[in-house]
Length: 165
Image (tube, rainbow, N blue to C red; front, side):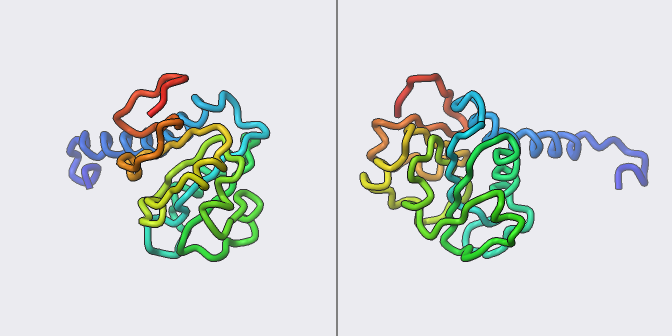
């Protein structure tokens, strides 16, 4: 519309730039932690576009999975609503039936959607995570106790290698 009326569109450009930055934030943090993705295991929890729906259309989690897979990572995922993925997507991400199955031997766990099911991490699940890194862009599980042995990374908190939450 700004083009039609020959008006500046600073706000729209800024929003687009911000959205683009946020889409890549999680992948950048994964790279910071893993250094490279070849033969690394990544679990993504919350695959749908938003919690409580069963569509993968426009899913940032799926875009992340595609990018990590293309760079050599093995990606497993879980979403409480998603029961199956299209065949082409199943080559990119291994859909698991539970959080527990998804995080086994994961070097990084990404909390990609704010699903209430992810607020129930217990010590059994935490012990399955190989390298103890959780990337939670929205800070959804930030208030859970029991993360003393984890590197917890979310927007607004600096990550320094070796730091624990």
